[in-house]
Amino acid sequence: EGAAAEEGEDDEDAWAVQVLIRGNLAPTILRNITSSHLHRLLLVPGIVLSSSPVRSKCHTAAIRCGRCNHRATLQCPGPFQGMAIPQHCMGDQGGGSCGPAPYALVPDACRYRDQQTCKLQEAPEVVPTGEMPRHILLSAERGLVDLLTPGMRANVYGIVSLVSSGGQQRGRRPAGPLTVYLRVVGADAVARDHRQRLTGEEEEAFLALSRRRDIYDVLARSVAPSLSGSYTEDIKRAIAAQLFGGAAKKLPDGMRLRGDIHVLLLGDPSTAKSQFLKFVELAAPVAVYTSGKGSSAAGLTASVVRDAKQEFYLEGGAMVLADGGVVCIDEFDKMRSDDRVSIHEAMEQGTISVAKAGITTVLNSRTSVLAAANP
Image 1 (cartoon, rainbow, N blue to C red):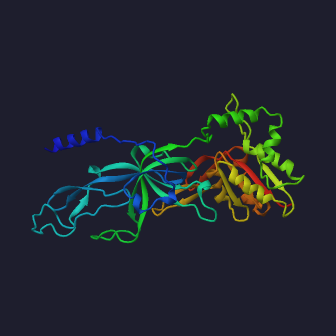
Image 2 (cartoon, rainbow, N blue to C red; image 1 turned 90 degrees about the vertical axis):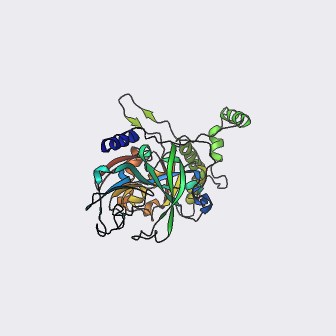
């Protein structure tokens, strides 16, 4: 019987299948998720802010009584919840001879799954003015681990679930408030080109516009049209060139030449430098606005954070979140010199190298920097 049971367990593991879901669901903005969406499948777009190391989660635990060798199996209720081991032997038939808390875990007989926890933040362009961006926890298992990386824009298919954030008391129900998280059942990466489908009339209008000899001047006049003056003409041309960007090249020897254009607006106060930055933040498909005085090196590039389990994970900064877009830095001269040096690699190579707390990796940061400073 024991051999047959072990053979059945092997067959069950061999036929284990994970179903990944994709579809044409209407996207649900992260801040619009309410209690009415519980236990429903949603498509949530956003930016992956951080991801934890892959852990082995026990989903079926095997326990054994230390006195009568009675065996039993327990199922894990959720990805963030533990298992309550019985305090009395279930094979004692009510005799009580095994005593209290007789069970012990048998690690070799347990079944485990790969699990990873990620944090998804809503895109900066959908955050209302004056409000903080919101985020939600993601729980990915088995084939979905290591699929989401920091700085990646993704459409996540997940089931809205609840978990207790106040701990769990022995023999009682979970105490404390409940936290919403997404149990991931599928994910798709969002392309960096941000292409939009055009109608026939719009395509004809763009083709007619491209044939004009003064196309550069037309685009330059479209940049912040409310700002005028002779000194703004060259600024508008530079910003128009930055928004369209250059052509990135990859040489035969593997060397990459960036196509991102960086612009520094240097001028006296009250010359509409911040207004140009605000316009670019609204016009660019992907843009992040920050101030040099309130920004640090970790906030601009990447930081290593320690979670509740005392493990380190990587969290991307503004340059990583704006991959494929523009980073607008106001008061650039007010930045500390150490913080200003930290973004040089991102501006030159389009990458951010991290070697902290045992984590060594390279993050993509293919962004254009638009900075404003006083002389």
